[in-house]
Amino acid sequence: MKIEILCTGDEILTGKTVNTNHSYISQRLTEAGLQTYWGTTVGDDRESLVNAFQQASQRADAVIVNGGLGPTVDDLSQEVAAEAAGVELELHEPWLQRLQDYYTSRGRQMPPNNKKQAMLPAGCEFIDNPIGTACGFAVNIGGVFFYFTPGVPREMRRMIDEQVVPRILKSSGLQIVTQLKRFHSFGIGESRADQMLKDVESLAPTGSVKLGFQSHYPQLETKLAARAANEEELQRVLAPLDAKVRECLGNFILCEDTETVEQIVLSLLAEKNATISTLEMASGGAISKRLVSADSDGTITRRGIVSRNLAELAASLGLSLQTESPDLDTAGQLAEQLAETTGSSHALVLLQSIEPVDDNTRSGADIFIAIATPDGTLKRQARFLGGHEWVQLGSVEMAIDCLRRCLLGLPVDEKIDFEQQG
Image 1 (cartoon, rainbow, N blue to C red):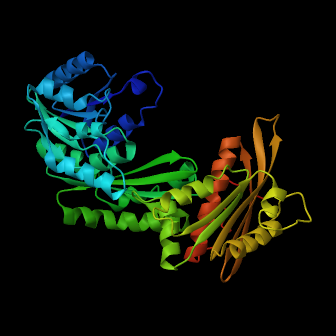
Image 2 (cartoon, rainbow, N blue to C red):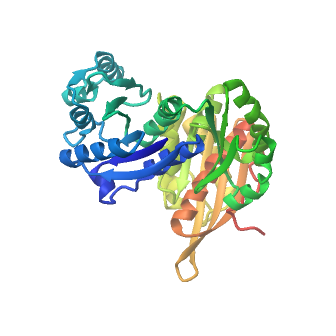
């Protein structure tokens, strides 16, 4: 089966937005035993889109279209799909109701232009979007099925994994089921993980499972793409590999599949009826932002304090420090005071002492992390070397990971590949 991926949007065509959606879709097709023959990018222009759809229908057996399903005037996918298929647009009442319920649940009135997202080509197959406002659909254009997906990455990925790839597999005649198992880790680099897991694929029948890695520092994604004749065989094939990855990566696994480490941390805090406050030095409030964004009802996160100045951080808690430089004891003192001042059961503190090295091309940063809990205070010190962004991303991830480890009863001082050793 020959498949084309057709991505839409001026921002993609001009390079303003990096097209990571195409790479994800192509990877998922490959992992499922399908092959991408063409990748096309088209701007938000009606005539260009019509021509692209017609050309794709003449050479491909299936086409995945990404983007252009939003409510604005430059989102043209539904209209152009209907024109290319020779049908009219029709209102999909169930999706319109979903949109209205979505806004009502948030205490807002749906903007009139969102109704556009419920206008679909007549006779198309509806494809659900459980986490967004842009539904997908499949429509026959020139004898070829086109599968339309939203441009928002997390919405696209779920739709591709759960609905589009299974549909294409079924239409291809391949009698297989697939599953992509993902492990997100922090502290192990790609080359080390590859060495640790070099024999994993040998635990499964040849060709049934593919091991892969995708590094997006500070995290590493380890993927097991499995396929089998049926669901029972799939789980039997995947089970020993799943267990081996867990054994090898162990405490470094942050979360799995679509989870985030922030969600895991907040879930663990919720289980303990606990709350959290944070204090950050020279991180731009990145920890607080991630935790607060994941705390949908705001019941777990209490307060976030951010500053580049250590004295200002201390003063915000009514403390006067004897030192001008951050250290581990100061981090612990601040964490304990933060918990007491805010009434939080847990308090996370990240302090950093940063200085330029190597003619200002890299930074050296001493990282001091402290976590105050009802049972005592845990501390962690590390040193990072690298560009400013590298140091900041690594230190923030380490702080959140230390909190995760603390809540799980795991050691918080386990060495990672990204810190300076010795």
